[in-house]
Length: 107
Image 1: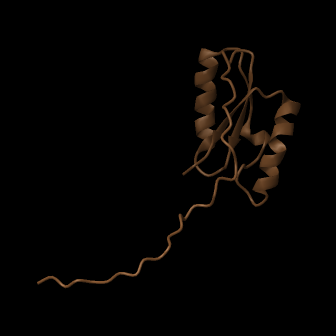
Image 2: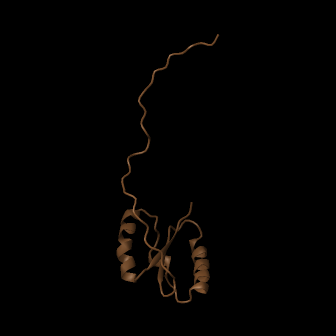
Protein backbone atom coordinates (compact mmCIF):
# COMPACT_ATOMS: atom_id res chain seq x y z
CA UNK A 1 0.00 0.00 0.00
CA UNK A 2 1.34 3.47 -0.94
CA UNK A 3 2.33 5.73 1.89
CA UNK A 4 0.31 8.90 2.17
CA UNK A 5 2.38 12.05 2.80
CA UNK A 6 1.49 15.43 4.18
CA UNK A 7 3.01 18.46 2.46
CA UNK A 8 3.70 21.90 3.77
CA UNK A 9 2.97 24.53 1.14
CA UNK A 10 4.92 27.75 1.06
CA UNK A 11 4.36 30.97 -0.74
CA UNK A 12 6.43 31.14 -3.93
CA UNK A 13 7.83 34.25 -5.57
CA UNK A 14 8.62 34.75 -9.24
CA UNK A 15 12.43 35.11 -9.50
CA UNK A 16 12.31 38.06 -11.88
CA UNK A 17 11.94 41.61 -10.75
CA UNK A 18 9.08 43.75 -12.02
CA UNK A 19 9.70 45.38 -15.41
CA UNK A 20 11.76 48.53 -15.05
CA UNK A 21 11.12 49.97 -18.51
CA UNK A 22 8.11 50.25 -20.73
CA UNK A 23 8.03 48.70 -24.19
CA UNK A 24 8.62 51.43 -26.76
CA UNK A 25 8.04 51.31 -30.50
CA UNK A 26 11.06 50.70 -32.71
CA UNK A 27 12.52 53.55 -34.72
CA UNK A 28 11.34 53.55 -38.33
CA UNK A 29 13.63 51.77 -40.79
CA UNK A 30 15.62 53.82 -43.25
CA UNK A 31 14.34 53.48 -46.81
CA UNK A 32 17.90 53.24 -48.13
CA UNK A 33 21.46 53.42 -46.87
CA UNK A 34 22.57 55.50 -49.86
CA UNK A 35 23.77 58.86 -48.61
CA UNK A 36 23.56 57.69 -44.99
CA UNK A 37 26.26 57.56 -42.32
CA UNK A 38 26.56 54.29 -40.44
CA UNK A 39 28.49 54.00 -37.18
CA UNK A 40 30.21 50.77 -36.19
CA UNK A 41 30.33 49.76 -32.52
CA UNK A 42 32.38 46.82 -31.34
CA UNK A 43 33.14 45.30 -27.94
CA UNK A 44 36.63 44.25 -29.12
CA UNK A 45 35.98 40.63 -28.20
CA UNK A 46 35.77 38.57 -31.41
CA UNK A 47 37.09 39.44 -34.88
CA UNK A 48 35.06 42.60 -35.36
CA UNK A 49 37.89 44.13 -37.36
CA UNK A 50 37.40 41.38 -39.97
CA UNK A 51 33.60 41.38 -39.77
CA UNK A 52 33.26 45.16 -40.18
CA UNK A 53 35.62 45.14 -43.18
CA UNK A 54 33.41 42.53 -44.86
CA UNK A 55 30.22 44.39 -43.95
CA UNK A 56 31.61 47.62 -45.40
CA UNK A 57 32.55 45.87 -48.63
CA UNK A 58 29.12 44.25 -49.01
CA UNK A 59 27.14 47.35 -48.08
CA UNK A 60 29.20 49.62 -50.37
CA UNK A 61 28.46 47.24 -53.24
CA UNK A 62 24.71 47.66 -52.60
CA UNK A 63 24.76 51.31 -51.50
CA UNK A 64 27.64 53.15 -53.22
CA UNK A 65 26.98 56.45 -51.38
CA UNK A 66 27.09 54.98 -47.86
CA UNK A 67 29.59 56.42 -45.38
CA UNK A 68 31.00 54.66 -42.32
CA UNK A 69 32.29 55.89 -38.99
CA UNK A 70 34.71 53.18 -37.92
CA UNK A 71 34.61 51.37 -34.60
CA UNK A 72 38.10 52.84 -34.11
CA UNK A 73 36.43 56.23 -33.59
CA UNK A 74 34.50 54.94 -30.56
CA UNK A 75 36.82 52.42 -28.91
CA UNK A 76 35.42 49.44 -27.06
CA UNK A 77 31.72 49.37 -26.23
CA UNK A 78 32.49 46.90 -23.42
CA UNK A 79 34.91 48.34 -20.90
CA UNK A 80 35.33 49.42 -17.31
CA UNK A 81 33.41 52.65 -17.87
CA UNK A 82 30.84 51.05 -20.17
CA UNK A 83 27.88 52.92 -18.65
CA UNK A 84 29.44 56.33 -19.34
CA UNK A 85 30.65 55.31 -22.82
CA UNK A 86 27.18 54.15 -23.85
CA UNK A 87 25.46 57.17 -22.31
CA UNK A 88 27.70 59.49 -24.38
CA UNK A 89 26.92 57.77 -27.70
CA UNK A 90 23.73 59.65 -28.68
CA UNK A 91 25.53 63.00 -28.50
CA UNK A 92 28.56 61.60 -30.34
CA UNK A 93 26.30 60.17 -33.06
CA UNK A 94 24.64 63.56 -33.43
CA UNK A 95 28.02 65.30 -33.76
CA UNK A 96 29.10 62.82 -36.45
CA UNK A 97 25.77 62.90 -38.34
CA UNK A 98 25.13 59.19 -37.79
CA UNK A 99 21.92 57.82 -39.29
CA UNK A 100 22.26 54.15 -38.30
CA UNK A 101 24.46 51.90 -36.15
CA UNK A 102 25.83 48.40 -36.53
CA UNK A 103 26.72 47.03 -33.10
CA UNK A 104 28.97 43.98 -33.11
CA UNK A 105 29.05 41.93 -29.93
CA UNK A 106 30.63 38.57 -29.31
CA UNK A 107 28.91 35.83 -27.36
